[in-house]
Length: 371
Image (cartoon, rainbow, N blue to C red; front, side, top):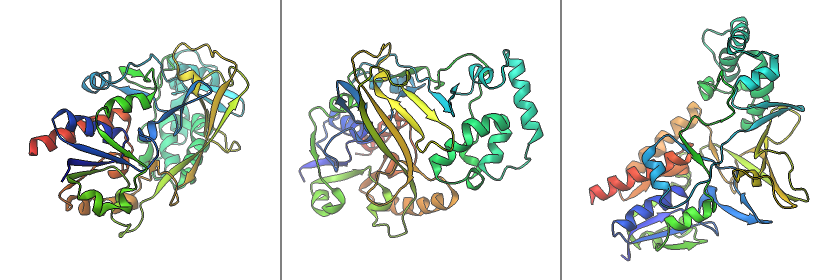
């Protein structure tokens, strides 16, 4: 065997795991089906602007060890995620905060806002919520639910809120302060040179083969290494023998526009039912302190869709049926022995980037300890 580890997938989990193994003196081969590294955090230059090809990614964490780790490979800017919601031309700040409540009801003090929410909650309270709609109204009342939650959520999941399980939103962020910072995180930002540059530094000195479909040539690739890390869909690894897990996918329409500033913010969510897309990303505003220089801008409209074979799976459908099916696949994975399943697809779990890094570091440390 030529390598100690075959790592399937050059996304964040695979790149971090490969870095740890290489630093420990292990021989690694990374194979990637796509023609580029970095997985869904891949950024590319379009009209001189760093475009997040697979949707917006803002790094945020309260984990100091992860923050120190990632700063070994990238300098981060000071971008702070402050999205806004557009409901039929009405603009609201997110997350739900005093600016949101003032725009919606004209209230000024936290006490007034809390009283308004409590009044609506009490009038429509459900003792044991059976679906997302009942749960959301229990949390934030009817006005916020109708304008900022209901239609956006239904577009995201392709199902009425009355058919979605209540546990999807065990809580909604409600902050009685005039602060538009979306993430409750000590550390936040975007790599100044883009996420692709971050992935390049993680994989520096490690052999990477692009355009390689592991599942199409598994036997030959497995023969190259003693052990394998697999970050693709777990059900695909087993040939969907137990059935296919469900995902939501996202379709992007990206345009270069002849205007220096299209919407004045990096992220604008469209929370009405009539707008077919969920949000518009204007990529140049991810550069902290940008005054939208240049004569052009790049925007991406995001359309949520049911996943079908050939599409990119984005969000696991975390209902009871899919949870039970994943548990059966997980049992098969644990019996594989020489294969470690990791990442969003390998573990059928939506991960924030800091949690992906923490998990990859944990798996790498355990693997090295077991050698």
